Image (cartoon, rainbow, N blue to C red; front, side, top):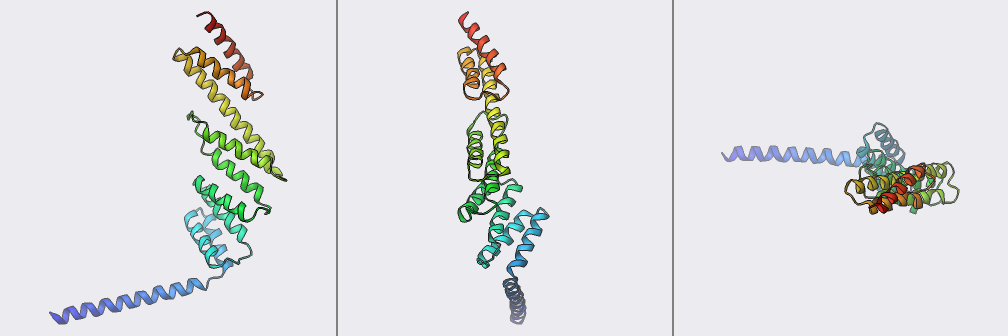
Length: 221
């Protein structure tokens, strides 16, 4: 019986030794991969939409080859990957990191725009909480007001107007909801807010008619 145990133990030790040797060899091989190879591997994974694999490879490149000349592209590729897979909070953090490290990079305006789009893509039309919309507007404004925003500045202005229109639409929606509850004063205030705060977005006429009708209804009560 003892000889059987010895045989099993010996077999286990040989297996572990072989496995460890293979693991060690793989680790050594990994360390010999150049920064350029890792960069290309990471980009290829991302191109194939294997975002986490691509991110992991690029993170390894960051830690193993901090002197890599294309490091700004590495940081931006990681941020873009989080954005493309829909991890918007992580994308925002990585774009901010990129901008902090490389504020003068030619891709900085696009990174600012992507931050704003990360907020924009989290907007839910049925959500009456305006905080994400307002964050998006602030972020788009930061793009358009930044030095030399280029094409991203124009795109940011268009998206900002779209966000403001959404806010106006939500105010009209709230106004209708208040009417259904019989709260005409609150309904009128919501409609008036569209006129005062979100004018020239294509909803002025509707809001004015709504506000006037509610004012008359309220005075007749």
